Image (cartoon, rainbow, N blue to C red; front, top):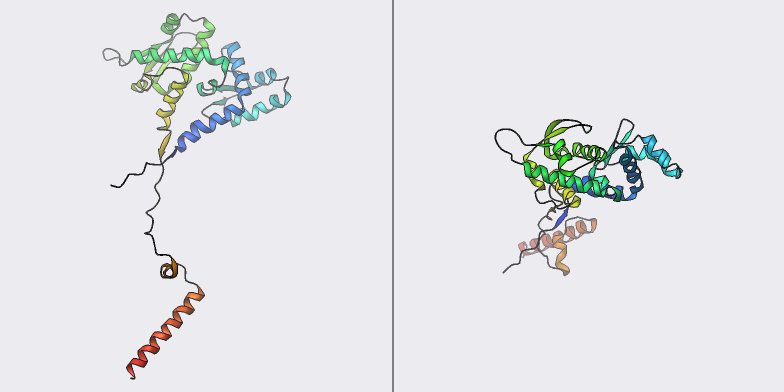
Amino acid sequence: MRRSRAAQTRRSPQWVQGVDDPEAWAVSHQWLLEAAFAAFDRTAEWPLIEDVQRDLAAEPERAVAVPQLVLDIPPSLGARMSQRVELTVRALAHVPDAAPLLELLVLVMREAVSLYPGEGPEQPALRGSQIKEHFDLDDATYRKLSTLVFSEGWFFNGGGGSGDGDWHRFVRGEILHLREVPDIDGYLDAVARYRFGAPEIEAPRDSARAPARWAGPYRWLYKRDVTVIDLLLITVLGGIVVGIVVWLLTR
């Protein structure tokens, strides 16, 4: 009985571009992510590039590098919006001080899961005022948490309001991707699978191999490339064959 060969897999190009490469960038530039979050944590709004540079003034080489790095940051980690640095949840996962805020975000997403599919014809909605009351949030934490919820629109279908007051976000069926998410790592994995599919894909199979051929003196019969020596050999053999035929005919 022939044993089936295990299918070979390789990393999905979408995961490499959307997850693996940004993760490597984040590790190399964690200091920038930490500085940007520290400013955000103080004011509850994403900081100006100039503000991040001022915070890093004691490290001049890093301070002057900030504007270009903000332009180079992978989209999965953040973006330069006007003159501000805006980070994603994936970027904040590399900032230890952001852990409590990210834990809150996961709890909010669980609330969104519990709202789906809702009752009656109206689309279920996650509401900021209810979140603030349920988790007993102060104004600053509420604004920061609201900012993160607004940036994670994968599982919402629009809404209204602002982080300074009440807001609502309509919950889509895709929120069920988060139904078993235990923590921020599980959340990021669920988002990546939703956006990019499975992290590993089946590798292309090699074309069918040619059957094994005899080695030794017969290998010449299977050569693909014709050389000058091959042509001379063919000519000599052809002359011999012709000579034999003529000899047999003239006997």
